[in-house]
Length: 210
Image (cartoon, rainbow, N blue to C red; front, top):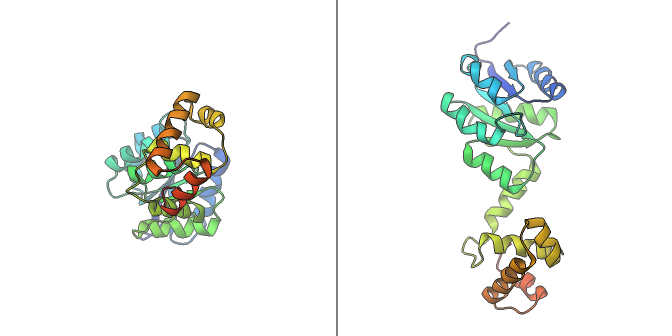
């Protein structure tokens, strides 16, 4: 029997087993009601306004429009809805794009069932739940020195140097040529006033540039 105080949830997830698993898990929890589920944003957008969800559980890797691009479109149609990302993706870029686009929380798919249920309640109440590893990544990013003399690309290269990557590996990973990497490293050394890889790493860590 429907309770009007139940939190209304829509799930957008293309994996049938995962989607049905979430629906069963959440539907069995008191105070929650899964009103609909969809395999993609493109399917959901046709009827989701009529579902009147309080919270949307949204995957990122979806057929058609991906989850990141879907967030502002969903918020436009449902201004009061809270969107909780539930995904396998843990890259800093993806996390910040999701949050910047309007996601209220960000969980990875290895999150426990009880944490997912608690997080749905938390976002409905105005919170911003995150998996522990995601929260650590966000905090680390904010702890970086915002007045760094290095460009975004230089910082990226310096982080790869800290990871022990050599110039050729950096070039391959960033899809840039070796000469460009050399030029960036030269600029990094100049800006930091150092002459070696070890000194660059030491100075960057001392000044919280990475």
